[in-house]
Figure 1 (cartoon, helix red, strand yellow):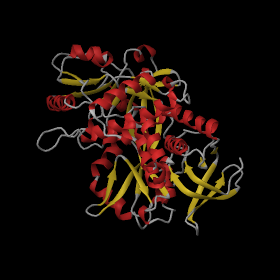
Figure 2 (cartoon, rainbow, N blue to C red):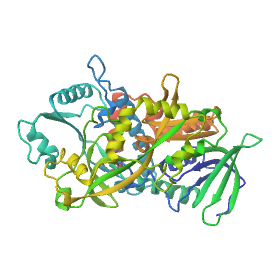
Figure 3 (tube, rainbow, N blue to C red):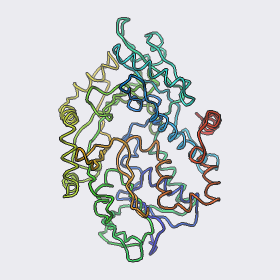
Figure 4 (tube, helix red, strand yellow):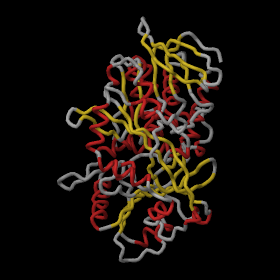
Length: 491
């Protein structure tokens, strides 16, 4: 592949974020020169790969950590509204690509799977009912159903109701329009569009070693071919670092003050995967429960129907593990390389003020296969060891940010770090990442290419692609767009 001397945009990492950013930019201004650089030999091999993430279309329909209970007992649904709007914005962009004939089979990456929340115990059941009442009053969630009745739950998720008795206090909610996502397949389709329609290539087996400021406001991007050891330097007007767990280490080399104080803590994941087709057929749902007391949001257990490479699967988890690697294909030295003078106070502050998280991770790492099966049996009482196996998921790096009161704070969402002029941006963090990729990448464009967003032509194009980004989301607009997108995406 022959390189140009200068690019308008270089994206580091060939996952869903870079694919989305590059494609949005190309939609707004097709003649921009864009290059994607990837250290592996294929796209979507780390966090975007189907087995490396939960595959949930995160829209706050079932995830209870987006609807906290306030001190006065009310349920705050503001974060849920925000997440739901962002996922629906992603669906709008994907449906636009289908309508344009750029994606021919939406069911290869998105499928309808109802989303449920399920809890045990009176206090949790009361909370879930209060959440249901708050959701019922808002147009984004007014199709929600709620029940404390075992017979109803048997209709919703029969596998989980095996051997349940009437004296068990439980409650569940359901929203029919939930989705199951194969982000790996979607990412491959987005890169295929970039390649076929816009001649925008991925430079594989190439690591970005450093990004230095150039004298004329450009960036010098230094790269090494991992197979030949050949080194190249190209100019870029804008750089986006979207390398998943590897983003932090590269950001730390960039000479911008906004990077100071950032650190990261790697968390690996594991799933229990069902091997018995008869059991897999009994469950068609995503069922999320509550995290344990003192446990982090990443620990929320869920039993999920998945569609991966055309095959229906059943997964339970996630279970956290520890590896000092920042990427599945990373180095065992990643964590140690990331610690520096600027982020030591942040790292120490997070450790000291998050001792329950440390305890949780130690307990998770110490779990045996039998321990994991016991956790599954809280969902499926008659689960048998021989029907399940462990599968290692992707690496996540939880973002640590400077905090003036506690030294550092642990961020559980996605975090966008940008230079003042927007010429370099970096995405850190994890869930709900891929689900909200379109909104996050539009935010990157707003920082890096405001002229594309604010021009008359840009506004018209955005309104056609993602109306929720340009208009106030009213009840009427939401219902109209949801119906349209549901039809286009064959949901």
